[in-house]
Image (cartoon, rainbow, N blue to C red; front, top):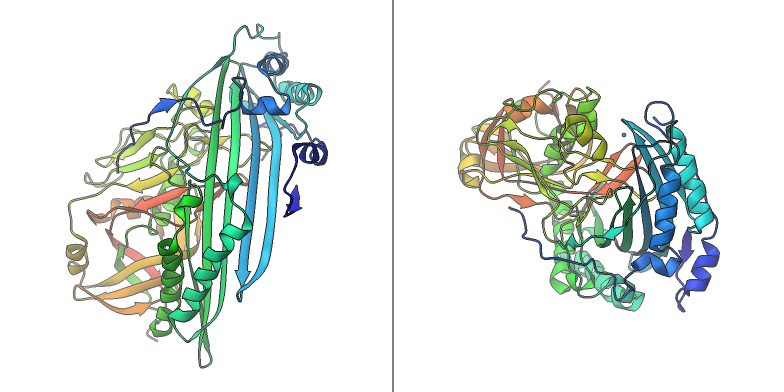
Length: 524
């Protein structure tokens, strides 16, 4: 539900009265539904901001006794496993256009998703009503996936400590519009002042605090408080009859302390620079060239063209080009790729995934050898391995599926300047916008927004509006040099799959790929 901002805030009674309606659905994949190094975690109880030992959701009437009763109902028809995913999420947005507020609203989610597994089939239902009657009804709906004797009654419930990979000094629940407005106004003013050709600026910020609790039929309960913030600025510039538009964004699992004058000036100046640079840029000549991928945002190519193919559900179903290739060489021996949920405060980091599994640093490719897929509970059982902490969902309304977290290639041995110097004629790809990937085959097309021609080992004129077209596994095999300057992209990345969107991180050092097709202008 969406509620306009009210100066007097939301009382718990008013919130509960507004969110009393419930909804229930049932789904099953086969016949009811249809896409640096690790931190050392200090372990301790999840941040529940002083709530009772029964956990955060006790304030909504959900105690351990109710959890046990609902789980027993979920297992009542012979399911092999069941879990409950509770979520209370408060999200706020504030935006300016032409210096005036053009959006200000909040979004509140409260509910529970109930999942029952039998083999690789899933029964799923959700409810926005956390009464014991509604929860039990959802559990019985999800249980229809199974048809057999009830599992033994749940005997004990234990709450477990979770690692902590994100910290918050100023929670978003304590921050109002009056504190956000000055930073947006600063970014707007800074961008407008960058170049007289900039005629329009749009800037917005979003923040959320999501409380989750995962309880399963093994008797385990895990809780987490997940912060998130994003900021996004778009510039429109005009020079005579020509108009150009570009953007910059950032996203973190952090509180209001992340924002200061420096971060807002960077948001404005990078967006403005990217925009006015386009006036001097031209489309490159079409052809097949060596492409040097800049550090940071170029990780989107790694994420889309390669990373999705390493999600275990695609391999379990035989849809990925990497199916049956564990233990085999898929890249040069100087390439190592990580999917990591432990990077402190990064956008894709997790203390626990949405199945309650602790996050971890998962080595996907080590020295060119495919070592692991990204697993949720279902795929881990299929392959006889442990889950990797990649079971993710958009909200309590969806079942979890294997998803990326922060996916990146680790540093190599080359200096970035030496990589550029090694290219006689090619393209330096800096920023991207839209892209398309065919998961099964690995074919991709990415739209290059900002880049440069490389001529005789030096960066030349800027280029724009070109498509990079290729085959993900082939491009990975064609990696020739890897720089020592890995960056995680700071942008507000979102990943879509199976109709769900989740926040992710991505990164790359400077990387030279031999021979990628570049769609541009023809000589004729």
